[in-house]
Length: 511
Image (cartoon, rainbow, N blue to C red; front, side, top):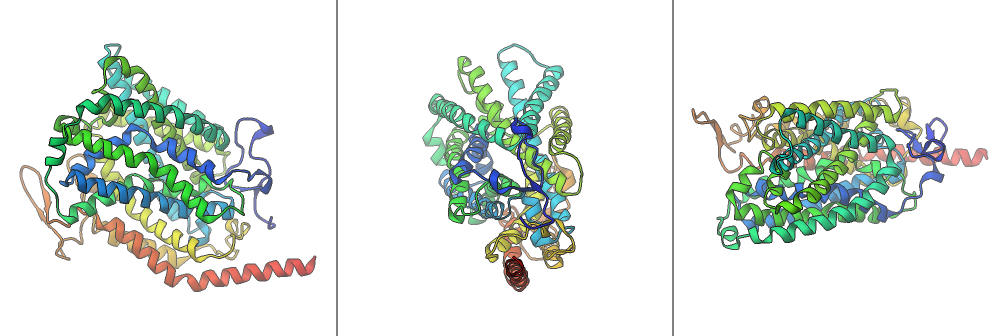
């Protein structure tokens, strides 16, 4: 291990349950995970019936069932394959994603995307928690057991407690938990599908007219952002316990299979349900899981609700665990369990606020996804290009040293992220102006480029033009930042790696 790199010599306190490793480098003796182990966290976090709600979201773009199916089959695996590329950095450097990203942005410069990443993780975990709370309220109300604000608060606290407890315990406990949840939730999801097949009306499903290609692009961006790109900023957190000798291809493959397998099936089934019942599709906007649970027979509500909540919790656990690591990477000097607990408090407050004051769930949620999706896509493009360009492992000591080879600030990456984000925000619009008016500033490049026209209407303002709702800004930020980084930083990366070889040879000569 290079001198100067903080190393976690033991991952758990005294061999106990709580992971003590924070953002330190994982010691070689602790790196015992196998590539197939990556299947469990990604599958368990994405097997939730929440994925079925995307059937309603995709059809909302005005596309047909077949168009939406193509979007799901293309966008979901591609988005998780991108996660797999980021995960390669984890096995090369044995550190959390936002620490490894310092190689591309500089030790201090990384704090810029780090803040965006932290906000994204907090938003995702809160979204999953509130979905679980709303589902709980729906089930209890349907069964006539309880209702009202007190029930909502109690449900929010209990669900947050589950999430925080697992996150505080850390990596090893989470991996064991996810492997168990995979089997339980997978079985219950299959049961849900069998029980709801009678609700499918194929004649109504296939009768929906096709939409323009631009609408398909918008749906593609939304599904990529909602699945793989929503997790990409934490992808290396789960591969840092992999052996250095592990194949890059296996890392990518198991991330992709684990993350994409369930959502592809769930989204297509959700398309069948939403396309069969417009009332169900509309209800999903306010309470995704609760709406889906409402079509089950009474006897199935309790067992399915338990499993549905656990799957949402499993996804939130990944988010809050990683958001705690991101908080530490920003320079907050506290133990990792404490960082997870702090994020848990924020999650609880956010969940209660949304449950009481947000009139619509999907509006603010999608608006949130697209807004933070632009800079996250830009960051992902930069880091993926950095990972694919590098041929050697990271200089782990330099990841913690502003005077090291990665420097304090990498201005090429920071400027690239800033410019592509500004361009990207100009090419996305807030589709939910009434539910999330704080996002109405976007889309400022559409009219100058002739891609859309903003129409003031007393009944509700809107954008006119097929490209306006295609969310081109996310794709632009991802692709442009990737291409710029490949060209602009290749030489610098090669010089960094030549220095690594020279230092290694010097050490060998000294020995």
